[in-house]
Image 1 (cartoon, rainbow, N blue to C red):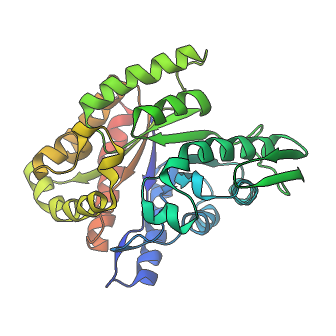
Image 2 (tube, helix red, strand yellow):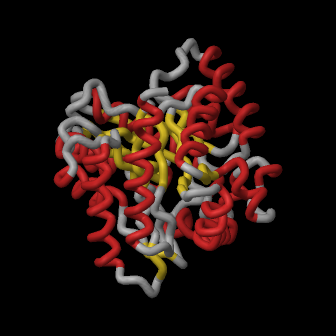
Length: 336
C-alpha cells in the first residue's frame, strides 16, 4: 500500500493564510521524512467560508521542497479549463517534479464555479471528455488540430511535454455512477471518493469492475481512495475532538451542494456518528490500521490519500496527527 497526504489548505476567513501556508509546507517536509509516497492538493474557487491557495502553484512549491514525493492534483476541475493551458501547466509540473505528477481530474458540482467560467453543470460531462482528449493528444502528438465546443486547436503544439511517457497517470474522481463509468472508460484509475457510504461503494465497485471488463481493461495496479483521519487514545476521544471541525467542513460541503452530486441515500443531513461511520478513519492507531486494511480487503484500494489536518484545528494538533500516523500506523501497515 502507498500513502499520500492530502493538504486541502482550508483556513477560516479570520485566520492568517500566510502563516497557514508556512505550516502546510512544514507538514509537506515532515510527510516526506516520515515515508509518505505523495502529496495531494484539491481545487475549488470561491471557496467561502474557507480561504484556499490554488492547486498548481502550491504543488510546484511542493516539488521544490519535497522532491521524493509524487504530486497529485486531487482533483483538477477539468470542465473549467482550456486544454492547451492545462496541458502545459501540468507538463511543467511533471518536469519540475522529476516525472512524479499524477493527474487527478473531476467534474465538479458547484454552480458558482461553473458560472464564473462561463459554463454549466449540464455542459460539464462533454467538456470534461473533450478537454481530457485534447490534453492527451497535446501530450502525445507533435501537433494537434481539434475543434471543441469551447476551444480550437489549429496545428497547436504543447510547448513542454511531460517527462513521464506517454503521459502521467490519470485518476478520475467520481461520486455518481455515470462518473464511475467514465473513470473506467477513460482513466488509469477511479479515484474513490471520500463521501459515499461503504454500502454504496460496494455497489459502485461492482459497477466499476464490470465497466472495466466491458472496455477490455484490467483492474488498476494502483487504486486510490481519499479519507479523513483522526487518531486518539480511544475512538470516543477521536470522535469528540474531530467532531467540531468535521461538522463545520461537511456543513460547508452540504451548502455547496456536494451531497446533491452523490447517490440520494448518501446525503450529509444526518447525525455526526452516522455521518462518520462510513466516511472517516477515526480511533486509536490500531483501529485506524484495521480500518485501512478492511478497505483494502473490501475494495482493493491500495493508494490511500489521507487528510490529517482538519480545518480550524490548531497547527500543533495537525502536526501531532501526522507524527502519530507516521510513527504508529505506517509501520503497522508495512508489516501487515
